[in-house]
Image 1 (tube, rainbow, N blue to C red):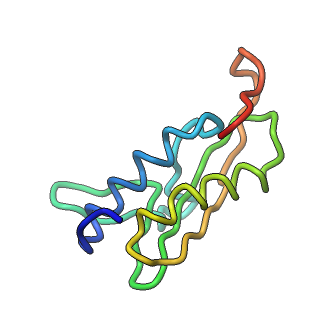
Image 2: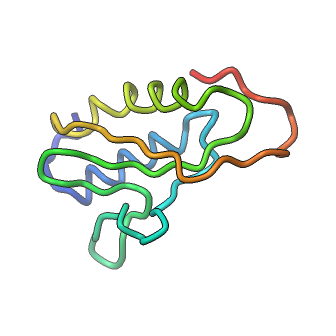
Amino acid sequence: MTGTDDPGSIAAVVAAAAARHPDVVGLSSGAFRTISTPVRGGTVSGVAVRPTAVEVGLVTRFGRPIPDIVAEVRDGLAPLTGGRVVHVFVEDVVAGLGGGAPTGG
């Protein structure tokens, strides 16, 4: 848990945690910019905190099965969402970043 039910705080914590996954290159707000949460002074792009769910848009690196990455990210974020369901969307996959594919975790 984040210790708060404030959508902006949850979005910030979730965004930081998702970005730390070794197969995540970055977060994406989606083609229509709907995966975002308004906060004072702007938005948290790539995370939409809804009343009963949290949506996360990812850009992943090429190399591992996408369902495995999605499951790992979803499982890692679930404790941070205040009991909301976590929906993870892979918006893009990037190849050629060098260093080979990480093992995930």
